[in-house]
Length: 91
Image (cartoon, rainbow, N blue to C red; front, side, top):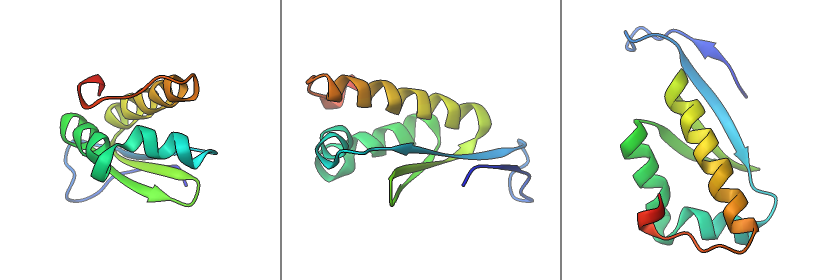
């Protein structure tokens, strides 16, 4: 589900929701890290909410933050698919 909208509690403007698919569970687990620590870092640094979805991850937040988070996760997913290890400092 993807969309734009205004929330009464969100005076900054539009919020956005995007999904990042992970067809391979091994890639997903390598990217999220132990106890989802990589996801928590991304959430904290970008001000996003990241949740699990049936196909991967759902990102919710301000438009530009969600787009940046989406791009970051797609790039990290590509690195893992190429055999690179993702460490806490990489995120």
